[in-house]
Image 1 (cartoon, rainbow, N blue to C red):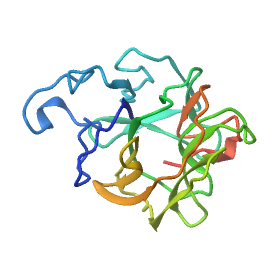
Image 2 (tube, helix red, strand yellow; image 1 turned 90 degrees about the vertical axis):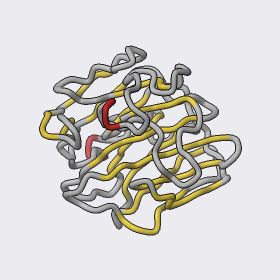
Image 3 (tube, rainbow, N blue to C red; image 1 turned 135 degrees about the vertical axis):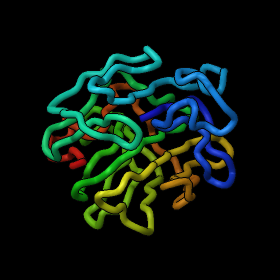
Image 4 (tube, rainbow, N blue to C red; image 1 turned 180 degrees about the horizontal axis):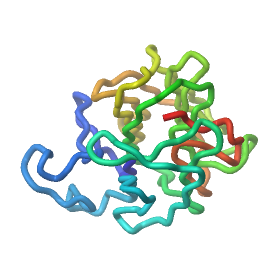
Length: 212
């Protein structure tokens, strides 16, 4: 899981962030795993190497009911579908422009399976979230704004997929799955400057955790 300040996706949808790949697998040769673009834009990076240490050192995360197993490239966090989460008690998303990149492998697809969220409580006026719907599709939504994006196709189970959410001043919101642009919107969401969770949202309820 990576959070960048600014636009980190090129026009054809190819991910420009490292994802969880090693430095030697990045086109163009070796790059820094904590500052891949040399501009300080990587704000947070969770590699889940048997811990929730932020590689950038920028944020402190707390794991709840997390185990670890084989990942896309090395290890990964395993969320149990009922109460697992990784949380930062301060907001990670900037309020203006950002890119979030996640690798996810669902065991089952759940209604309100939260991949990423930033808000406190289900009724807060400012929030943003990325979750699976009742039909397994991905949704970006929130309150206090005019936007909800839902992908045309559902996620799949048993396969690693790369999900990228991008917000910038030129393209608005863009949703990529496996390097393919799948949805866009010029709508708005109020982004609350509170806490951030990956893989679940215990402020909304334990059942809103992904299973994978």
